[in-house]
Structures are given as structure tokens and as C-alpha cells.
Image (cartoon, rainbow, N blue to C red; front, side):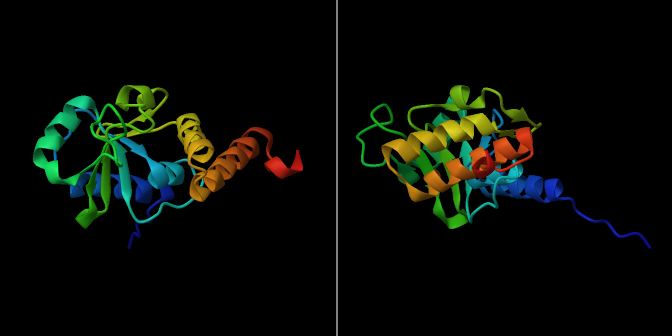
Length: 164
């Protein structure tokens, strides 16, 4: 008898694909995994309860037509004034057009590319977390900054940031 064990990587990929499947949409361009799922992929911390994906402009235009009532402009008047997200709360998926006005093309740079999705680079996550930590002083982003820096230092130097 053979027993199949799932690796950590397999579990993360299944989570990512499950989140994409929950959108009930076929993406034209592979979405970019951001947030907790990306941090889990990079072995920084476990993900939270939701799925966050940056989508291409083409996909955004299609998704807006499918979910006009679920667009969140974060208090702004339009997508150019502020960031825009489609919140699929019933399945806990956020489809994001921009974060701090950085779009799919910006945040795809240096990504790890798979057939049906991309993983944002650790450097890009640190960039986004820093923007949020500095402008909004969000405790979660401040904590994630520290975790990312500790992770980078540990992997580069084999020790934690506090030991330097």
C-alpha cells in the first residue's frame, strides 16, 4: 500500500487554485497572488482566511461587468482617484485592480510564474507592506514588514535580524 503525502508547496498551490476557482471566472491573464497566500508561499507566515489576487486590466474590465455591485473604491469617487477592489465576500476573495495605484504590470515584475497564476515577489510584498505601514500605520503591515525582513536576513545570513 502506498500513501501519498502532500508537501507544503502542494497545499499552498491547492489553496491558490481553490481561491481562483471560487471566483467562477476564467482569467485571461494569470492573476498575481498577494497578501497572506503569497507570504505563506514565501514561507514568511501562514495565510489568513481570504484570498487576494491582483488582476490585469483586461480581466478587471470583465470582472467589473460581472460584479458591479461589489466594487470597493475605499471612499473614492472613481478608480483613478483611489484603489479599487472587487470584494467577493461570500467566498472571501478580493480581486484587486490597484494597490497604492500600483497595478498588475507593476506588481508582476519579478513574480514567480505558474500556468494559471503568478506569485508576487517577496521584494514587491515588502514594498507594498512598507507603503501601508508608513502611510496608514497598519499594525498587520508593520508586523509583516518585520517578518519579511527577518525572513530575508535569515535566508541570506543564516541568522535573525535581531542578532545582527
